[in-house]
Length: 193
Image (cartoon, rainbow, N blue to C red):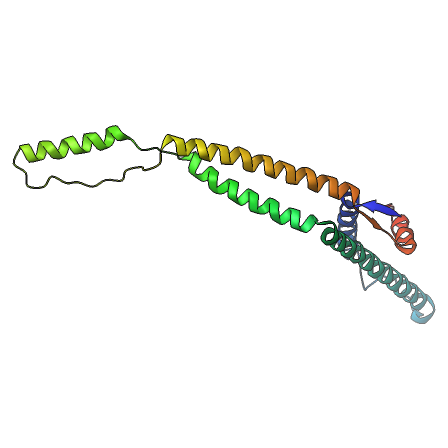
């Protein structure tokens, strides 16, 4: 049976959830009634409980194997199809976009009026006989054209991220894995297929 990667991931996730729940249902004891003749009544119940335990234990181990076979196939197909590289590229683009956005959120451009005002204050100090005619303050050095460039970069990065997402969607839909007959039978038995 063939599944595309998107469906295979969903199946693997459902299988993981099923296994997790099933693990919590295991018990190594059984409530029994003990009468005067322990051997004849209790022992067959315990033997039956033990047999059921190991059957369930083996089935769960088979499901764990099936899950990781599916996971391994997904990983191999991710590598073969270039999905891993696309994901890496998308993460790089998202980090760059975040970096650019951090400047746009608090963008302050050079305020020439602020520089003129500070210069005028220093001239006034000199005219009043003050020997100190210099001051310092934090002046923004980015220009409004820099802000426009950041916005262009942001738009360009957003387009590239969207293109990556589209490529990933197509790859996940078109790339397929094949489940073995045993795995299909096992998953049908627990109603996951």
